[in-house]
Image (cartoon, rainbow, N blue to C red; front, top):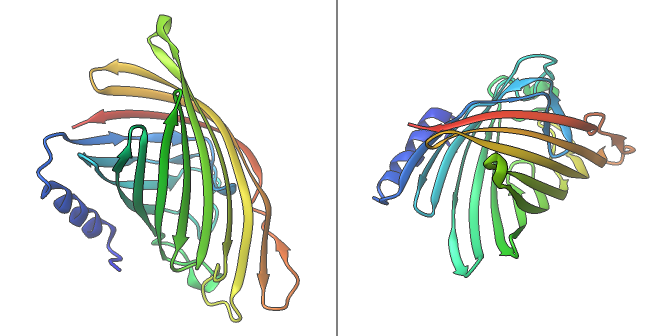
Length: 253
């Protein structure tokens, strides 16, 4: 596994370019969030999360990053650098299959505190759209955490023609179980739980191919526990409910 995020990302870009797809594009999206919450677990306070994404036909490759601005959580996302990719296969009208992956990189994580510096998570999603509603069941498996995660999401857009925009609604529910959740844990530490998210986003077209998006979501982690060997289970105190404001500006180059 390549531990250099820049080299890994460049390799993805070169592979995508080799396809020679006519509809290639690169988009940059600097993003600010009021809280960094991942699958119902708080990983930090206000954060800067720039993204760069390359699309070539059915192939998408990108680099998602997180840089905390305040209330940093030691050992987590300080910073976080995640190369990702996916490939969309059309199965039928309004039905696609999407294999993908995320490589999670935490350069400043401390192994002695139980944090991994690198984990790798392949995934498989099914996207089905009916009457404008998009349903996406998805399964992830983190090969380092030995974690299986099932997630389902529903998305729907309501046009606001008089304002030249729309309201995007998103709902997500997930449940997971990891059998090796902490580095250097002997015996291994299990972690399991569930989470949900409900949010809205308003995208505004600022200029050609440039978009400002403002969103709000409430997300919550529930029934999230750790358990090492025969010791009693303990509550994951990072699994909390939070409202999150997101402001993002996307533009091509």
